[in-house]
Image (cartoon, rainbow, N blue to C red; front, side, top):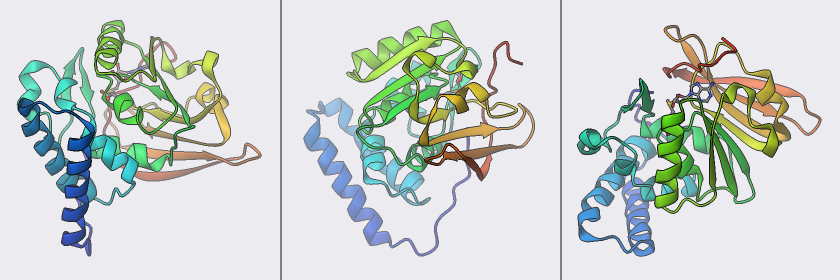
Length: 249
Ligand code: SAM
């Protein structure tokens, strides 16, 4: 999905540049990046600074992950030159990889940690799962289009994201085998919050999900369950995602 650039008044430019530089150096040190990857790393630094930090994402673990995941390896070859643009991109089968800012924002809003067990509905290219991977304990991700699930699983394995497990299936019904989850992230828009997902969310857990029709206004919704299981929801921002498909429709 695409979200317009919104600069935060008062973001100190020197702070932004220093943090971006720190992230760049720390990622460079953490990877034996071959020289042909250096240009992509520089483009990721620009992406993180201009598209993500400027819009207010601050969680260091999220910024570090956005700096490290090679988005150009999650898009079809003809879109590699556009891999770090401020846009969603086609990934085949009528589906898209989400805009980088939205990936970062949805990741940050879930306040995850190394113990979190996360369910993602809508694997797509596997990019969102890869961004989650270094931040959490384990990612279970489910994709309804078998070809996308297969290629994402292979890509994630080859890139070394070993704490991600991919399945083909209708994510409306969640993945009960591994439930309950600390957090659930849904990357396709449904007309309502799927009750099976609510049931698979732990007490004190959070879910982020776009809600709305395919060609109607959609809202990104944050759902929190308290320690007694009571649910509250909050509209975060208007968004445009591909639809949550499946037989429940
Ligand atoms: N998270 C993905 C990424 O990082 O590339 C982008 C996801 S794309 C915006 C939405 C994905 O949700 C599509 O791949 C689509 O096939 C999938 N999808 C739609 N309905 C689904 C369902 N009921 N269960 C599982 N996946 C579904």
